[in-house]
Amino acid sequence: MQNVENNIDIWQKLYEAAKKEYHPEEVSPFIMAHHVVCAIEAENGEIFTGFCIEGCSGVINLCAERVAALRMYADSGQTVVKRLIAFLDKPPYGEGSGMPCGACREFFMQLNQLNENMEILTDYNTRETVTLKEIMPYWWGKERCEKAQQ
Picture 1 (tube, rainbow, N blue to C red):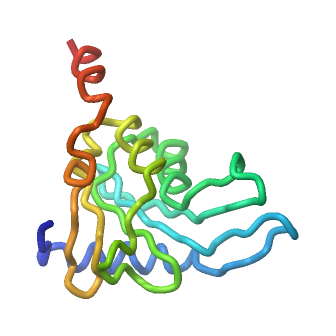
Picture 2 (picture 1 turned 180 degrees about the vertical axis):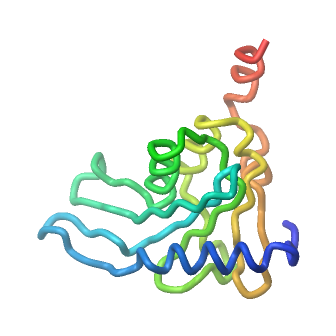
């Protein structure tokens, strides 16, 4: 983990952008949305947001992180994320809060291997971060990506 004091302004921006998406609601008796939110900073500095949408059947669930990444790709064609913040009702506070789930971690690695350098905010008050590579040090697809680049 690293302390990223020089990024205080960007973390505030990302928090405020994601916070706008937070308004838990029942879309129907079967679907809940906007109860987990995310903001990502793309490689070019643009900010994209996302929200979680979950139904009674797991196949329709989409995490806030993947929604933000899909918006980034759909709106700009970008696949590299520099920074990510995700949270429920309050910003990440350590203790594993704010961490992307396994499916999201895998999605980001498959989207672009450079995402291994993405900073994930783990504590808003201290600005502690972890990189995707630190939480996925032995990613199964690394060799496949390297072969594709040759």
